[in-house]
Amino acid sequence: MLKFLFAVLLTLGSVLGSSAQAASVLFLNPGSTTEAFWISYSQFMQAAAKDLGMDLQILYSQRMPELTIAQARTALQGPDRPDYLVFANEQYVAPQILRLAQGSGVKLFMVNAPLTDNQLSLLGNRPDRVGSLVPNDEEGGYLMLQALIRQHPPVQPGQSIELLAFSGLKITPSAQLREKGMLRALAEHPEVRLRQLVYSGWTRERAYEQARLLFRRYPNVTLVWSANDEMAFGAMQAFAETGGTPGQDGWFSAFNTSPQALKAIVDGRLSVLLGGHFTLGGWAMVELHDIDQGVELDQYGGRDRQIPLLQLIDKAQAKRLLAMGDAPDFGVSFRQLSAKGRPTSYRYPFSLQTLMR
Image 1 (cartoon, rainbow, N blue to C red):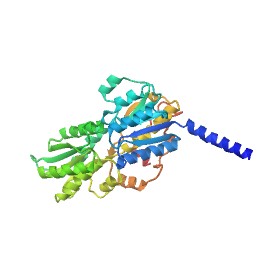
Image 2: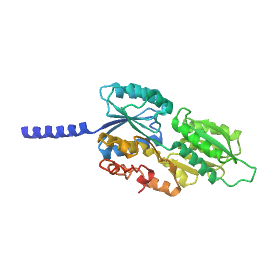
Image 3: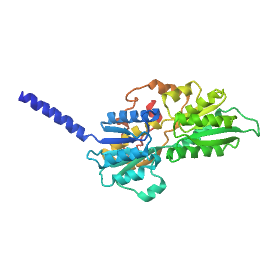
Image 4: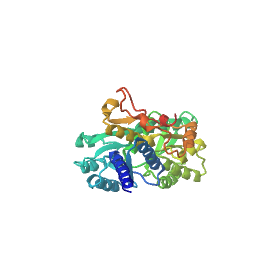
């Protein structure tokens, strides 16, 4: 019996020891537990954490910045602090989180939306801010409108194509950048007339209510640019209620590779889809793993980087992404992406193509 108890204690000590050595990460997810994008984002992070042997916890703020701040306060000033805190600068919460983090010993990594230039000038470079990864939002907004215009049938000289745009929140950096890209593409196409840009808070319901009014106000609109899939579906519903058929009488675009958006590309209701940025959190986990292993990110492309994750998704790619289904590991060996022990010429292959090899 004593030998058995001794063996159990040894086993328990081994388990506790190994868990104690695993780097702990807390991700403050700014989205809602009902949003397909943020759910898939978290799932990809969890797959990365499992493969990399890291301890990941995720808290959703349900798009309430005050809840994000409260979660950060508990994590940074409570007794059970993570090794790393991952968060987005959604609605400009970063300065408050950085103030809460002072003296906590927790290392900070930012995703999706980094510090603005003004925030960076005020807060400066701090040793606890170990890195950031953001997608190519401005380029994404540009590419999406360019592709949407290409879908529209040619018009006679002197005629115009009418456009509506649905954005997220005015104080969300990703929305601002996508709008900026959209306006850059618009400047290159004088035949396209933007009738109105509205803010729908990323939600289908708000976009639907706005679109019902806008399609009555502007009955000749045939192009609709949306900064996410939920808003696109709200606008499509309102368009269908006017008697129009998405993909035939009007051309719609969206960001995000939710199953519903992928199916809409396959069946032609959505004409343009951009995606790939749901992988960003998983790639951040690879970098955090490497930081924990002593890798200097500055030698492998820099600690603060924008990566071209947003890309146009065609029907074939949409079918392939749908076929991947709910594979728990997404078919990715995250450990093989590590820069640990690699020459400094190595660059992380963070892209949607890494999933579809």
